[in-house]
Image 1 (cartoon, rainbow, N blue to C red):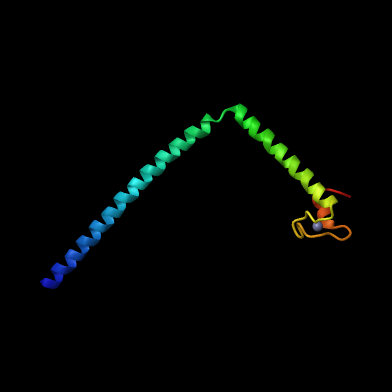
Image 2 (cartoon, rainbow, N blue to C red):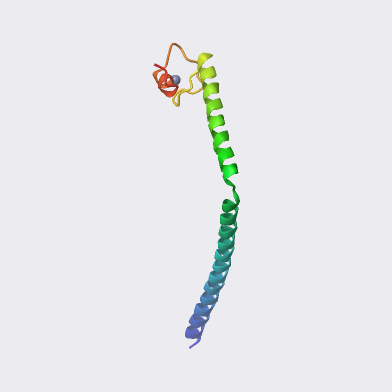
Length: 102
Ligand SMILES: [Zn+2]
């Protein structure tokens, strides 16, 4: 009888531990749902003007990056993904393809 009693006690302990885990998981889910709602609201708050500005800046950054790569290339360094930054002797097919040179 003592063994059975102990076994049941253990099951009870495990159950209450599980229950606690479920509770904390539920709290975490609530927190995540609130965060999700908040983020969605923030996303909607971004105006079209902001979106346009971000797109314009992204294009500018891309153009500037390309200009910098052209400069690096003209100074004799690889700008291709394979040898990037290494000194270049002659010409490199990858660099030319990357910069769309013939
Ligand atoms: Zn190269």
